[in-house]
Length: 319
Image 1 (cartoon, helix red, strand yellow):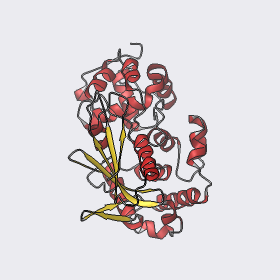
Image 2 (cartoon, one colour):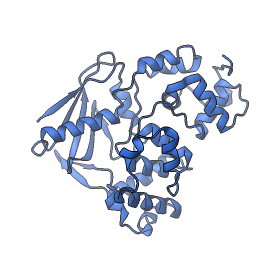
Image 3 (tube, helix red, strand yellow):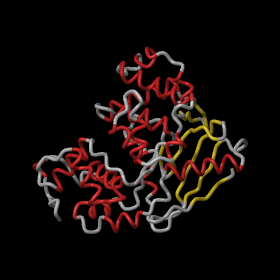
């Protein structure tokens, strides 16, 4: 089986990043077990199973990429798969600079040390990133991922490898022609179903081009994405982070991130979205996205909480 070797910048925690793709146990696209990440995806016009394994350490990282079945996996197809892995695992990000940025920050230096090497886990395509973000709007993550599973099972293609079935995330073409009622039958609201169908049509027609957007600055991308039905600044900022891999975005409209800044940096005094965005820009500069990611990692690990009775660490805005 042909393989490709990738050397991410250190530090790099493959296991932690791979686990972050699995928001809940309802996840069926991103698979991670016993050190092996696997995802069915369309590469070179073919549906293949992408496998990624770590052969290094956090300090000296190395990844091996392979495809199944091996026969149609030419060197060009494998190279394309490797480029996808590099994007999804943000292998080029310089986390030593992130560590230096938060060195004097009591909360973030603690979270950086606890989760050192965790990278921005990026959704493979703009369509996937936007569809996921639309599903996540205003509902609990487990509920959103239950809907996501239904969408994948209904519209995604499947591949069987070694007797196991793997689902690929749906292509825009598989949803663009679907009636809104077909998505509503999966439990989605009418508004979300309409947004997803229109999104699929925009991507399929070329009206929404990821490569063209990638050349724009953050505000240009936010403005363009916000013209889509059901997409606002909150969604666009998460897409900037979790698809385009921008490191300098702090989604100030996110209720958890807003609450974390208010609690740990402003002694519980309210701050509006504009104030939080300005504070994040001043304090964390080009690394706001990683601050957001590590705050989420800290929440998952129980290292931080928004519950007032468990306030342990406090730091004023002027510190």
